[in-house]
Length: 150
Image (cartoon, rainbow, N blue to C red; front, side, top):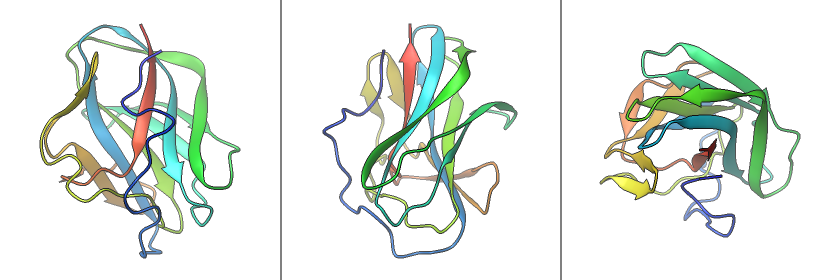
């Protein structure tokens, strides 16, 4: 399985001060075809998010999953059926943070971030107000990751 971040990686800011409902995520692609088996995100105990979503670049929902994880650290939501992805195609992995408080590295995606076969382009962070498709691009890394099986 491939992911962008190791379980030992941690954010600079563990929980932003904003308490506004927000969907956060990242745009990514894989150089190899595979299946997304899960989406994980780093959360502080004050982050109550549980629902993750995988979308194509046009915003169509390809799948959702829920995590039962709590506390501080990585939370993983596994899809009941792995979702096929095509090499070289962009996708958006996200989760809904109903009380904000998501993790953040300011300018973490100011340039391309890659760990083969996965890549996040510069400004590949995504945000959206409320429980929505996160279409606003940002250089911030909100600590959302995918688990891809090749």
